[in-house]
Length: 199
Image (cartoon, rainbow, N blue to C red; front, side, top):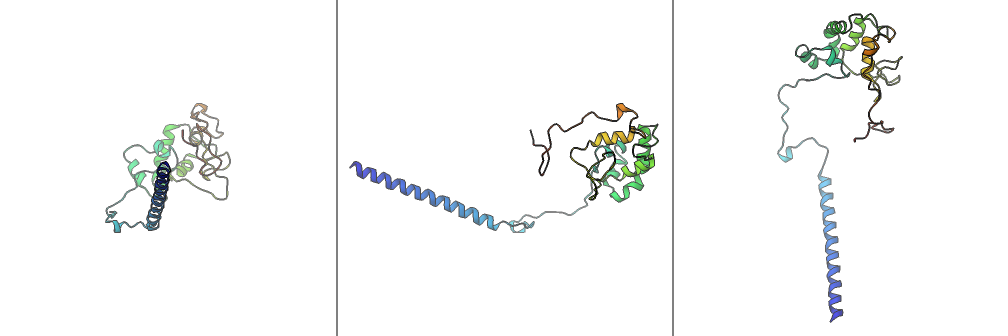
C-alpha cells in the first residue's frame, strides 16, 4: 500500500512539474508575442490615443552657459524676451544690456584675461549658446582655449567670475574671482556617460 501511495505521490509531482513547465513556456510565448507586436512607431491611433500638438509653443528658458542669463538679464522684461529669443539674434539685441550690467558689477572693468573689452566680452556672452570646436580641446576655458565646449570638470563659475572681475591679468579682485567650489562632490567616471554615480 505504501509503495502505491509513494508511486501516486511521484506521479503527482511529475504532473505538477510538467504543468509548471507548461505554464513557464506559455508565459514565455506570451511575452514573445507582446514583444514582437511592439514597434518604434510614435502613432497611437490604433489604441485610440492621439496627441494634440495644436496651438503656439514658445521657448521658456535660455540657459546654455551657467549663470549668464541669471546675472546679466533682469527678471521680468527683458528676461522673458531673452528666454524666447532665437540665439542668432541675441548678440545684436542684448549686447548693450549685458554691457550695462557688466559695468554695474565692475565699474573698473577695462579688459579681461583674454584681452576683451567690455563690448567684446558682452557681445560674446549675449549670444547664450554652448559653443563646440571639434578641432580643439573641449573646455570652457583653460587659459588658452575658450568656449570650445565644456568638460564636466570645468569650473565654469570661476571662469566667468575671473573674466568679469579678474582684470587684464586675471589677478584683480581676488575675493571675487572664485566661488571656492573647486571640484565635484564625487569623482566623475572614466567611461560613458562619465557622470558621477548617484548617492
